Every structure is written in C-alpha cells, then in structure tokens.
Image (cartoon, rainbow, N blue to C red; front, side):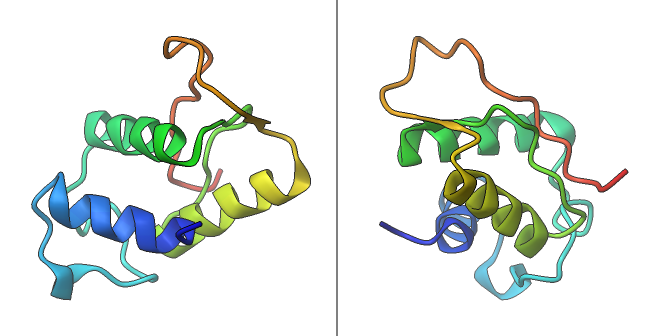
Length: 98
C-alpha cells in the first residue's frame, strides 16, 4: 500500500495542480493555496483510495502532520476499514491542530 503522505502528495499534484517542488512534509495547506473545500475533497479521495472511513477528523497544520495523523488512526483501528458506503460517514477535514 502506498504511504499516506505519498498518496496525498501525488493527489495534490495530479488532481489539484500543485507543483511537485512546492510539496514537502512541513508545508501548510495554506501555503499550497488549498482551501477548506479542496481539503475536504482531498480527504474524501484519500479515504476512497485507502478504502477507509475516518471516524476522526485529520488534524495537522502541515501535509506531513495530516498524513501521520491518518496513518496513526488507521494503525490504531479507530477508522472503519472496508468498502465505502455511498460516501456516508466521511469526516470533515480539520487540518489545523486546536
């Protein structure tokens, strides 16, 4: 399985038009000009590709932090892994730590 960070980086380039040289683990979504709607779309696509529904919102100020959060949730088994149910139950992304 492709690491979450690599998947997110590839999606940002392929789907959202972010240049590869702009992407780094410590870059924020604001710095990439990724607004909240695009963030929601990104997390939905990540969930679809990984066949997981996150029961918690991804938290992190940077791309690396958000990817690490998703990996921790998956490893802990606190997300639902398996076929998606028509999009229901998707978490709304919150890319900034409280």
